[in-house]
Image (tube, helix red, strand yellow):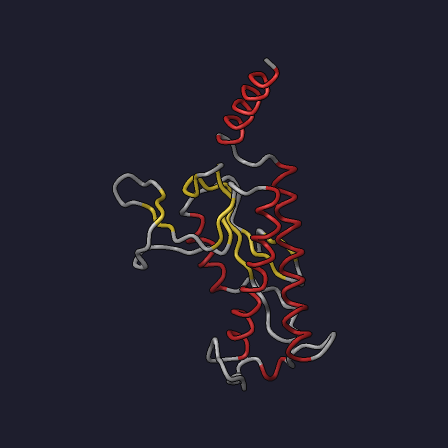
Length: 194
């Protein structure tokens, strides 16, 4: 009898968790994880490449990286890709422990022209690929919040919200969601507006 009660309880619990968005406290926990992982990734990559507590001088950011495997044409792009990879690993590890069914890393999404529904796609034309999407349990197309990671190069602590980023955030708004798209940077944390 006890076994049947446990099974019924687990089934109800499973049903409840299958059909929901994260509440405000859970969303705040996600944002804390994103901030921590972005800060840790920024520090780890800089420490490994330039020495503990050091960073690339601002004057070098647009120069070609002097490394064997270049991930971008400039230090800024190269470091951004490295830091994204480290941050994604941290984010996936930490979010999978707490919210395994409510997030996606770099999903490619597009809005259907006819139905106006958001769809997962492998088509590049007309699609967007935000860094992190928090969504309805087990449904990446029912978006709750979109986050894009930004790693300013060098010692730069300027606001990463440039005119290019403004256009990017406006394009993410078209995908919908319960909150405005946000940037996450090591220096400024989560930002929803300029």
